[in-house]
Amino acid sequence: MESGKRNHIVLVSKDATLPEYYGPYNSHYTKTPNIDELAAKGTVFNQHYTAAPSTAMAFYAMFTGKYPYESGNTIYVEVEPYKGETLFDLLYDQGYECHLLWSSNYITKADKYSKCTGRHTIHHESLKFNQSCGHNAVYHKENRQRNEELVKEKFDAIIKEIDTIDYQNKDIFLWIHMPHCIQGRISYGDDIDIFDNLIGELRKRFGDESLFITADHAHMNGHNHKVGYGFDVDARVTRIPLIAPRIEGRKTVDFVTSNVQLSDIILNRRIQKLPYVVIDCAYYCQWRRKTAIVKDNYYYIFTKKNKREELYDIELDPHQDINLMEPLLWNDFDRGCKTDIRQVVLYPYWDQIPQVAEEMRAIIKSFWQVGPWWYELKEKVKQQQYIRYLLFIRDFFKKRNA
Image (tube, rainbow, N blue to C red; front, top):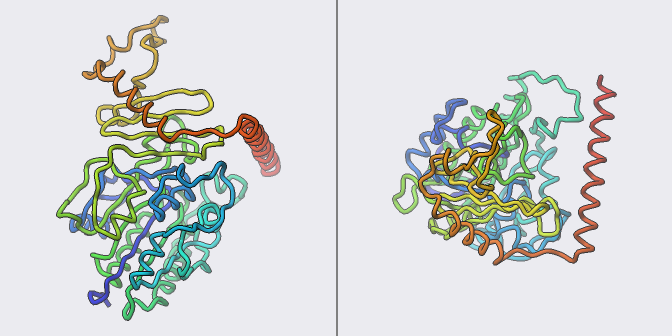
């Protein structure tokens, strides 16, 4: 039964999701009729970025409205519950009954690193519907076959859990976070049809004007020969979908937005144009930190450990092939010599690059901080030891499973 009498808000996010999984972003993968219809009625954000390519840090940004660097965290460890007002708290104060639903065998790990889901939220976390894949499945020897009966079982369990909520008599804020892949499917994006079916069921229960669709982050999808996320801030892993009910009469939002604005967008149905957005893959004492600044059509990346700078024009170079801040002499491997990039790459704005670079450096300087040298050294050694440990475990399981 469609509910048009209540003022519901339903946020549905899917982990590690590329915008182009969905029809409104020119999907090459599958059809998404329910998402397409919502997009046609609503507002599609075409340049929406996560504040972090890791789930916990992304959640912090989504529900507090702050960038991860504003959290005060020095390293990625379990945190105390957030003491400020989250989106959940603000909606609770407005009379909403707040709920969250996620897979208990997946999301609890991310939850302890964010803890920003409000003081009165009802947790629906008894269901287990996450299928491990990618790096989460490295150490599991599983039969990677589709199982449509299992998919239906898990999907029906999710719908049954949603129907335990009294949405016909109360105003509800419901956040559903779907995993990388639902059980019964086998890879990132392999369950987009199931996700679209979920959106269809939510439309019946809560109405189209209630639904917001987004992601915590995307993933590299083979870009630059990489498949994961979390340690990169390339646009491939940081640009995420956001589809909302029609806001300010806009069919699309084509300027840069961040998921730190999500609470404002949901609460106030307002879209503010920011001067720039910030993306961090780690906290300020972590030696693997990379920070990106997105300003207009420029995408700047600063890597902490080697102080490397990258600058891309993502309008003209969406795949980030040409680093506009590399030395002018590039290796011409075919001819065994070096060549001036400005003579072989057609880019009409070379004269603007020095000024853009200085603007980006000034932005980074405005919030950049480091810990005491001894603390940062300790974290670097700890991280190197951790990497060696992971490689040892990987090799152990390879030999065992051979």
